[in-house]
Image (cartoon, rainbow, N blue to C red; front, side, top):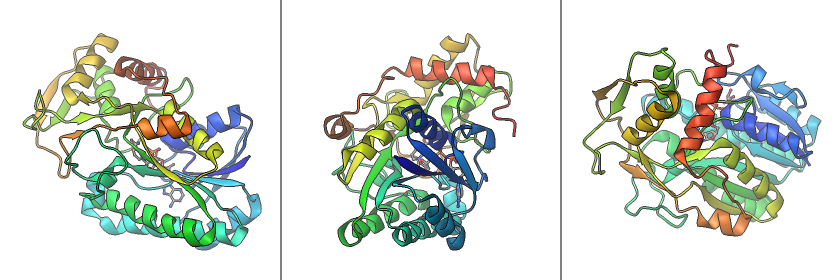
Length: 323
Ligand SMILES: NC(=O)c1ccc[n+]([C@@H]2O[C@H](COP(=O)([O-])OP(=O)(O)OC[C@H]3O[C@@H](n4cnc5c(N)ncnc54)[C@H](O)[C@@H]3O)[C@@H](O)[C@H]2O)c1
C-alpha cells in the first residue's frame, strides 16, 4: 500500500515508516520538522515538509501523493505544556487533524490509523484499563486526542472512513537505527539514561507519595517496534476499531531507575521532586483486545529488554540525531 505518515520524522512515526518500508509498502512522510528529525526519515521514503495547520499544504500533499491510507502521528504531546497553553494543543492536534480529514475527503482517501493515548482515560477507577473504561482526560493533551476520536466516529459513520484508534500507553525503547530524541524530553527512560551517560547529574523523581507500593508512579512501557507492528496490523485489519496498546504490566519510576542502573552499570543519583500536575498513580493496559482482534503479539515483554534497546541507541547516539 501507499501510506501517508504524518509525523513520520518523530519518534514513533519514524519507526513505523521504517517498518512499513521493510514490509514493502510505499511511504510518504508529512512533517513540519518542528519536533522531528530529517535524518530519522528513511531514505526510501519521500519527505514532504509541511504543516497540518495549513489546510492548503496538507490538501495539496494528500491530493498529489494520493495514498491508500493515512497514519496520523503528528501532534504535540507534552502534558505539562498542554496545561500551560491549551490553545496550542487544540489548534495543532484538533484543527490540524480536521484539516487532514478534509484533505482526505477531498482526495477520496478513507483508511485512517490514529495515534491516540491512554491519557484519554484520565485517572481511571479500575486497573488494568480496558477500552470500555470511561474516558475522562485530566489535561488538554488527552482531551485533544479524545476530541479527535469523537470526530473520527462520525467520519466513520457518515463519510465512509475506516478508522482505527490506537491508545498507546508509554512508548519506549529503540530500534538499531532509530530512537528517542525529544527537546524538551519529558519521558522517564531517556531522562534516566542521560544521567547514566553523564549528560545530567541526577534524575528528579516526580512524587514519592503516590498510593503505590514504593510511592512512585507506575506505567506500562511498550517498545516502539511493537507499537509500529500494531499499526501495520491495524492497516490490514479492514475494520474500524479502538485498541489499547500496552503490555499489561506496570513498573514504578524506582523500578525503571533500578533496571537502568543494572543495564548501564552506572550509579544514577536521584532527587525527590514535586508531583507533576495531572499524573495518575498507575496506568496499566488491558491489551487483550489488540492481541485477539489484530493478532498483535508484542516481542518486548520485559522492561530490561526495552531499556537495553534504548541504552544501546543512546550510547551510539549521545547527541541524538544532532540535527
Ligand atoms: N511517546 C509516547 O509515549 C506516546 C504515548 C501516547 C500517544 N502518543 C502519540 O503518538 C504520536 C507520536 O508521538 P511521538 O512521541 O513520536 O512524538 P514526536 O514529537 O516525536 O513526533 C511527532 C511529529 O509530528 C510532527 N508534527 C507535529 N505537529 C505537526 C504539524 N502541525 N504538522 C506537521 N508535522 C507536525 C513533529 O515535527 C514530529 O516529528 C503523537 O500523536 C502522540 O500524541 C505518544
